[in-house]
Length: 229
Ligand code: DX5
Ligand code: ZN
Image (cartoon, rainbow, N blue to C red):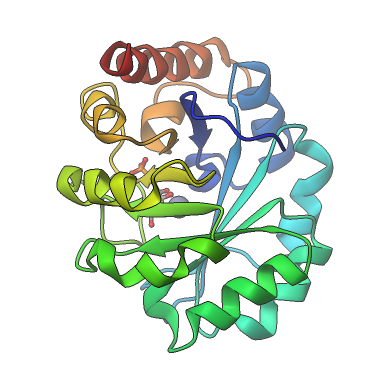
């Protein structure tokens, strides 16, 4: 995985057909997805339950781009090796998930993955200031995590603050929640480079009608790029 700050669209398969993940992943990649975003929820850190390491391992052969795994679970540390074995390229843990995020990020890197740290909307940018040297990606939540299809919460000031804290370090700023062609320009202009989008990508399409995914991805990408050029 090489580092660059170009706009990357990461569809969240939380909005895919749960009976057909392999074909859905292949369809979004064929239609221009840069990364594939996988939302792991434990029914405890967030009020919803999705999938665990065996499912993520089953997704792996279908992902030819980057498998970006977002853990909305606590505790994190006992499961890090399982997600490495499942083939995650990036593993993101929430800074709110435990008292020792510093140790968690070290363990993610030691297991051979890129380390991400996510912030809930109520958590300030300062919470990750002393973690940045251990971090490859900061995920700014623009909804309270747990469900797809929620309304975007404006975190533009937090994104700007993070961007200035990061400086020229090779750390992605990822935005997760309510990203669509209307909100993408706001976050891209503030400094985000990875845009997660669930409903905005899968809306109206299917594996039998994948061109809609392509048009949806293109709409988010063009809107974001128009704000950065
Ligand atoms: C929210 C998840 C998101 C979600 C985004 O808890 O982390 O990745 O699927 O979905 P949309 O784009 O529909 O807000
Ligand atoms: Zn997510």
